[in-house]
Image 1 (cartoon, rainbow, N blue to C red):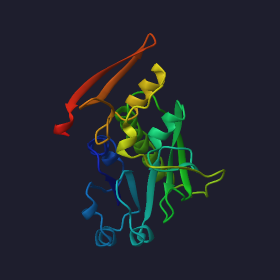
Image 2 (image 1 turned 90 degrees about the vertical axis):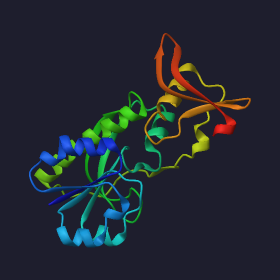
Image 3 (image 1 turned 60 degrees about the vertical axis):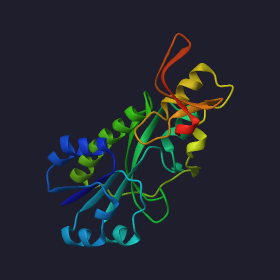
Length: 225
């Protein structure tokens, strides 16, 4: 018996198309209120896997079951919020997806597995790639049941970005501007924007070629925001 938690549509897609076909009985949870201690105690899952989850998990649930989280950095480097955006701002082209056991300390739990992952493309493409790679790791975990090992190395913590930080800063090179737009181009994320007089200009679908950036833009008057 296994549980997979994911609050995004692409989490559900990879569950339906890949994970649910693995051996065993599988349950998918997409809402915070459905992940309860009573549910965990009733079905007694071997693992609970978290593909993309926007809420804290209670200590009682973590104590009742082995909870496996997926984090888009080479832990302990990059603990904390907005890993995708922080990695791209650092100029990283690749990362690893780390499967680690949840503990009360954020992103500090022992590590099951790590797999390399590209940071190319839009944030949406990267997030979907992350879910697909997580499915591969889930398959390996339920086959091999690896013993998680304590994290080693220097701890580097990322700060969660705020919507206000999506405003495009001045002085970016064309390549950095492309990175800034693409790192925010995903469902549920505040798009890269700048203000011009009484308008807010938001950008998505960035392309970079020949030293220039092309992008789709939506221009919204301030009174409609």
